[in-house]
Every structure is written in C-alpha cells, then in structure tokens.
Length: 441
Image 1 (cartoon, rainbow, N blue to C red):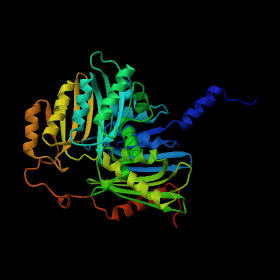
Image 2 (cartoon, rainbow, N blue to C red):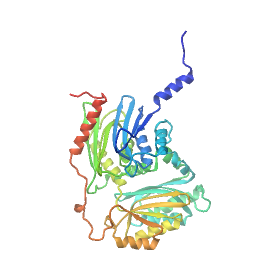
Image 3 (cartoon, helix red, strand yellow):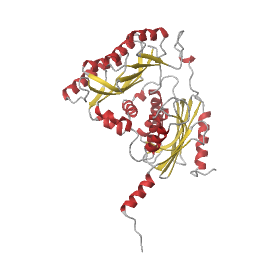
Image 4 (cartoon, one colour):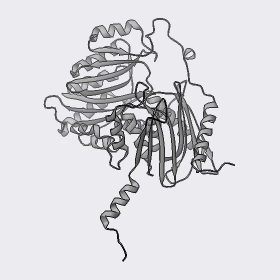
C-alpha cells in the first residue's frame, strides 16, 4: 500500500527545511557568546541576522560567513555593551525567536511608531540648522516623538516622527502637511522632503530607520564629495577563477559598523557569499566575497571605485565625531532651546538621535567646534549652565580639550597597511577549505 503525505505534512516539512536553526553557545569561547545561524539562503538573511544583534546593542567581535549552494551558515562571536558574554535569558530567548523564524520579527519593537507621521529630510547642512528645524516644527504645533539625523560631507539626512502637539495624533491635514514641507524646504536649502502618515510602515517593516538614512544619503550621492583625511581603508579586487569580487575593509571599530557596511553592500545590489570579520583592540577587519544579484562580479574600474567610495561613506556617516551630549526632557521647547544654545556657542551638531521612553524624551547629540574638533571645557560648561546640569549631561570617554587643538597629523589614525587584510584572506580561505567549499592547491 502506497503512503501519500497529506498537504499539511508536506507544508510542515517545507517549514522545517526553510526555518533557520539558531544555536547560542557560551561554552566554546572564553570571551564571547557564539551565535550560530543555519538556514536556507536568501539574499538579505545576513543583514537581517546582523540587524537583530545590532538592535540589542550587542558587539560582533568576530564572524564567519559562508553559503554553500542554497544554504547559509554563519557564526557570530558577540558580547554585550560591556564586553561580557550574554547571560540574560530574555536576550538569548529573543535572539533565538527572532533569528529562528521566517517572519519579520526583528523590527517588532518599533511597530508602535506607525502611530506617528514620518518626515524624511535631505538637504544642505550648515551651523544652526538643527535648531531651526526644531523651532519650525514647534512653531507649527508638531511634537517630535523620535528622530535621527546625520550630517556628512556638507549634507544632512534624517527621519523625524511627529504628531499633533495638542491631540497626540498623526498629522492628517493635507494643507498642514504641505505647509510643513514648504517651511522646512525654505529652512533646509536644497532640501528634498517627504511627509506622510503611512511611510513609517515602509521605514520600519522593510528596513529600519538607520538603513533608510543610509539610503537617503546614498541617493543624495554624498559619496561623490571630497573625502576627508583618515579615510577608512577599503580595497576591491576580483577572484576571476571563482567569479567573486573580494572587498576588504580596515578601520577603527565602533558600534553598528558591520551593519552599516552590510546595508550599503545590500542596497547596491550585491550578495555576500563568504566573509570573515575580526576585531583586534579598537580596529576592525572585514573581508567579503560577493557578486551581483545576477551572479557576476564587479566588471569595471569605475564600478570598483564606486564601491570603495560608497563603503567609505557608509563607515563615515555614523562615526561618532565630537562630544556626546544627552538631554533628558519631554518638553519640545527645551530641545529647541538646547539646539539654539549649541549654535550660539559655536557648536556644530554632527549627529542627533531622539527617542521617547514613557514621559521622558532622551535626546543624544554629537557636537564639535567650528573646526570639527572636540569643544573646549569652558564652552561645554557655558552650555550646561544655560540649559541646566540636571537636564544636560556630557558623556565622552576622552577628556575635554583644555589646551591647543590637535591638528590632523596629531591624531591617531587607523593603520592602512595590508597585514590585517592578508591575514583575513588567509582566515577566509582556511575556513572555506575546512567547510569543503574549496580545495587546497
């Protein structure tokens, strides 16, 4: 008698075959927790996995990436923000649940943002711009619930999530929306703005806010502008025998570095098949074997240079240049007053992030002086006295400058030597060989 599987059993088999398998191990490595992910391959799965870990404020110290045919294998060495192994059972369970399902759960924590109106902004940066943006929105009766703005190479891009100040509801009045766009377009010279109550769903379900800002700046071609000194070291070469383009990145390590690089590679239409990530001290080394989504490697010198420029820009956009200032206040007028105080004291905001926790808004600003260096102690003390020591805190590992500013040549810069890249290449080749993906000559 021939046995035939029911449709339900077949569907269960397909689900089991395609559902990622996640193993979290605290015993193998003495200094980090291993997160192993095996799953059927899809082009964005690596970015999704890294995003889950990044959203939990975890550091990826090492990683080994490999895809064999239609199967994806990845091992991450992660620590918490204090450099310790993961011990919180709730965090471990969340990682297993988020990575171990085909459902898009990794942005679940941001779904409530859909109750607000989303403003996308791209334009020319200048001193005092942020204070003018906040002042315009406050004057128009808009309350900023969350916001992220980055400045890079003379341009600014950001997302602002706003609501009606009186009612706390999304802005639905089409006339008011047009008025907000016109006012902000006048303030931000050369700006392009998009404002709607439905775009939040796109930002937080197809991608997160950080990735969207990368996309806005990429579309604005910020990578075409002059490259600053101390640029990240990025090289691209082809391995013609295997049909791969090999990308090497070497730069100072920082939070969300791997996520920023993967966002750009993915949004440029490339697929990573193998890779190795390593962190030594405060330096990061990354190597990726990738192809176009159609399976071809990089095919021209112009394309190679474009990849290099785009990755350098992606790394630089979020670099925490300046002093970190934290402002805790639920009053939008306080935020507008704070940014105006920054401007009046000659401070430039290079990055800003705002979020609301309960009744308190937590606002983070990275500020520099007019020359792009750390501001002096007297300047910060004057700003804190004006705004209030209880509301504004300076959070910086490095001490405030009290003497002469360092010149560019006095600063520590990442090494641009090739030793780390060659070492990474050896690691990748050895790992691929161990996995049986290539044969030793």
